Length: 137
Image (tube, rainbow, N blue to C red; front, side):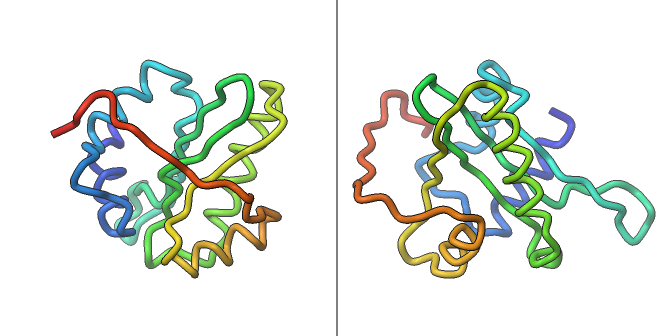
């Protein structure tokens, strides 16, 4: 919880936030369901203090795992932080018996698509549908 403000700022910097999702509510909800699947990556800042440089939020519903809010600070991308976070998520999901992992990527985000392809993810022949049950705003 002490990293909440830094996580939300990171998500903002990475363009992950949308006006219809309250990231603070997303974090609060995650703290009640599989909180160990909310990972943060820390690194030493210029002042010697630890700073949050990456996040990954995952879940497992008994059928498949999902990953959300994978983010790496723009100045720290291409340093294997995202890869390390995904490897850790996959290890934790596998330990839970999870047979398959899904990630949602916006179709316009070509750079992130290439990142996931390098990790062995492939486009599924499926369309994601959603319905909001609890409005955040």
